[in-house]
Amino acid sequence: MFDSTYWLFAIPGLILGMYAQFKLMGTYSHYSRVATARGITGAQAARAILDGAGLQDMPVNEVGGHLTDHYDPTKKALFLSSENYRSHSIAAVGVAAHEAGHALQHKAAYAPLHLRMMMVPATRIASFAYVPLLILGAILGGAYFSKFIGIIIALFAVITLFQIITLPVEYDASRRAKAQLLSMGLVHPQESGGVSKVLNAAALTYVAAMVTSVLQMLHLISLARSRN
Ligand SMILES: [Zn+2]
Image 1 (cartoon, rainbow, N blue to C red):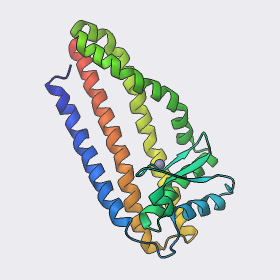
Image 2: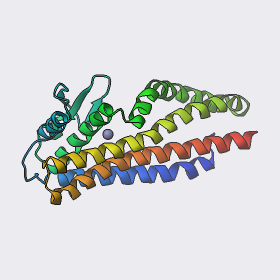
Image 3: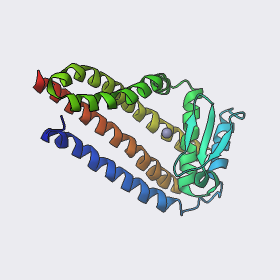
Image 4: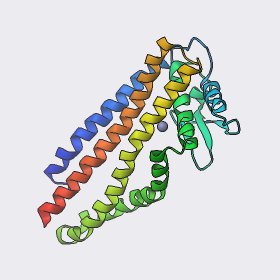
């Protein structure tokens, strides 16, 4: 099944994925060396945004790892990587504000966030199930593969849909973050360009993942059609 057309569908996603990683590394490392004029840390920025939205009870926790920052909607808590938690940089404040942006979405019952949360269990199952099916299909070959391909495409459709719905959630969290940072005076207007660059570079990795999934899905569909 990994025929010559596989690469036709895989290469654009691979290139975009590498470009996105490269861009994020460069932008993040640049703006993690530029301090904000206000001099607040990522943790303080997140705290201020949460407090400003009436979320005083929501904890802002420090976690290990590089760019492991996330909002956990089930725990209703923010988790910031040590460097973003402690740093005064534009990158740290931007990322921390973005994660607070997810908490604001949750509070505002932003529909795409809820849809994304609802899709998490199905996406976990699909991501877990499609790999052994793909391998089994590849081992057993043509006739057996055609039996499985419908299921594989259905599982992959769930994963792809999840990645598509992730995009508005990510861009909206960044939009909310920038609005709060500016209106609360946590960053100066001339610094917001740097915040945008960091957050756009981070969002591009989600775009790349989505494009990769859509292309893989198209490849599976083209395989199914050629076998029928
Ligand atoms: Zn996010």
